[in-house]
Picture 1 (cartoon, rainbow, N blue to C red):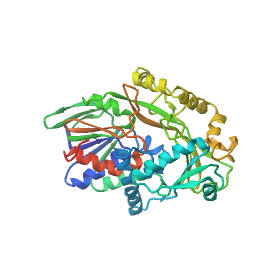
Picture 2: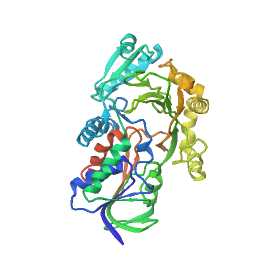
Picture 3: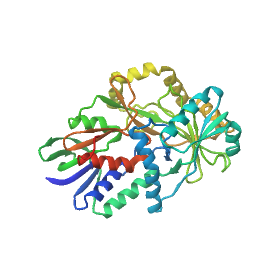
Length: 400
């Protein structure tokens, strides 16, 4: 039977960053990374907005707040060290009517509590920075940036391999068990014995956690996010990212306008229930995945509390003109003909039995392993600090 000192399950950016961190701490160890797909970073890592989040939104003291703040600098340093393109373009979080101003002020307070650089602007000041954007006020987050997280993940893989790490693609972990000396991983290519394991399984995290006896009382509910690329607009449409003020009645940040490193623009994402965890077409359906969502009591409790916003999201996902209205609230010059198809993403959102969307990153330990059970945005920004935390937990240095 093949053996390893550490095994990582999942080839997204968190798994790869953790592999690198363990390699730095244990250079003589045999470290193995397993990925069920035939390429790395195909899911949440490669299908997000590409935003390096500054940490404005997150509850002070939470994993998200701490790891995101540290992750901004860590991501920049990694990109600089390895000649990866990135840009610190800044972000405007815009209020489009007076009713949103109190929420804007509350967000400013939270950002300052997190130690995030933030500046409040009047509508006139915001228009001076971004003439195409309509607002009655805005917050400027100068530290927000853009990057291709898929490219970052692939560079991590390259470094890991060059230092002696091994990555296996197209290998699926079906289950296993813990024993005195470590874990036995059952895969579709044979068993692997490992001293310690880290599961960074994203959209499959709840299933693998249960398979290894981790104590979990949540389920991953997949939310598909539809994006559009913007055409027929000038290259200087905006120079920063444009986000709406978050609606407290909605669990996600809303449709935002994002600059890309290649000069293009996208808007998105929406947030609707996906009928398959890892298939991205609107008509994609996995009976198992859909049944897992619909039989989970927490899903129906979330839906009951968010019926209005859920209907709005579903309508906008189905009718492009309704989607456009969300964009035109802050950028009225974008028209229906400017919205062109772009790749969708699926967010792995842990939902408790009581119907609570688990907001923070969630790490669940077993005797010889650690399961990363909830790592939605800003996990890509936070990947390097998350990896350091995982390594500490795995060796008993800190609590999960």
